[in-house]
Image 1 (cartoon, helix red, strand yellow):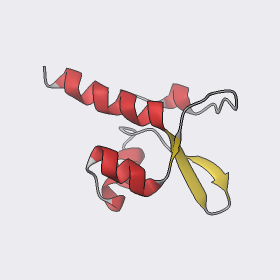
Image 2 (tube, one colour; image 1 turned 90 degrees about the vertical axis):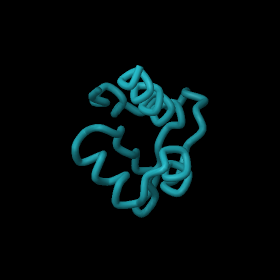
Image 3 (tube, one colour; image 1 turned 60 degrees about the vertical axis):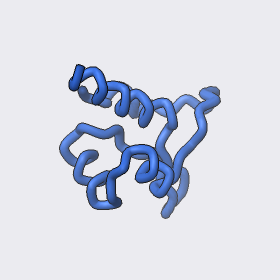
Image 4 (tube, rainbow, N blue to C red; image 1 turned 180 degrees about the vertical axis):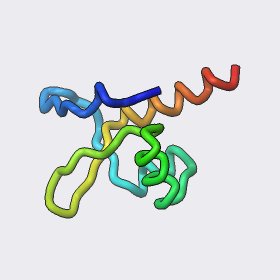
Amino acid sequence: MSYEDTKTFNPNNTDRLLRLRQVMSMTGLSKSGVYLFIKKKNLPPPYKAGPKISVWRESDIQAWINSLSHKWM
């Protein structure tokens, strides 16, 4: 599943914004695993909230997790 359509940031969205550690906790991936999955376009890329701050929308990560469960059913 490609997440190209999730690159547009909507400031009116009320999703929680997750930091890397929260994404790692939700997915069970290591830091390098998260970035490897992003590179392979399997995991949605982060948004830049500042020069050194990357965040993910919780709904993007949850959608990715849900897509995995559908592959195994």
